[in-house]
Image (cartoon, rainbow, N blue to C red; front, top):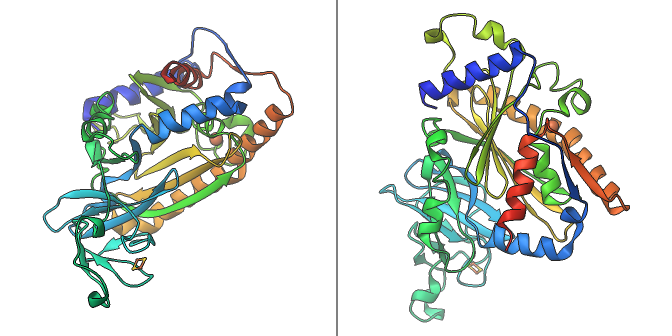
Length: 372
Ligand code: FES
Ligand SMILES: [Fe+2]
């Protein structure tokens, strides 16, 4: 993060604490329950926001080393992202040309990707490099390569497109509006800690809504997060992306000295939400990513929660912070989202977003405007 950005955000957070206020929306907003329930709307969101839109799936540091790879899944499409010996980044459908099994799982380094089923192996350029019983097959050709996907690592984040034929330029430009805010956060050097997957009985937007307001801290997180974090919030919009930040308790003391001595990152948590709803969490150290996508029907979603570590020597500390956040998310936030889904399905007419929930409002307007 650029020094002037960090200082400006720290100052805004401090002012909000000192004045006991938050950035707010001009008014309240009401949304019909159908935005979470309607199958037609859900189908259009699925196609337009997830299949036809590039998706942020991780941090460039997770595949920084030459010869490294990382497997992921987007809308049930298995993906593998690779960095070859010359540093070139590529992405492929993680499906073997023989019969479709995966050629990589998790993350790691190596010279080949090898399918666990019959042992076909591929170079990091996606070309078939070898297979047992070669004489049983005709010569390798285009049909024996892994199918490539457009990928970029703009601002230290991995962006891929899963629809066949998605334009590389669309993937390259996906983060244009917010990239300057994300550069210099060190995402390209951070190492993978872990990724957890949650299958949640709630609409994908109910899960994204969880990461967009601090109004719930004092109640839902009374004994977990609330003793550590203040709910005073600052918000910013960057085209189709947003930033929402809240301070740690004691920010006044942390910023007690001259500005030159202020910490590198603001003493708080900065959530960047990237269209269509992927949240990059930036605490004072390390980073996490919460990626939500529609599940099997409007009332289900799949959530991937990933953590990365800025300093390998402090990996254990990073893991503990990742677990702490993940446990709260799983046992408190996701539980609330499932309850909301049940309440809405039981016949609730609408939901309300207060003036103190400006980023929730921003995203509901954006999603509605973006749907064709
Ligand atoms: S499916 Fe991969 S080697 Fe057979
Ligand atoms: Fe929460």
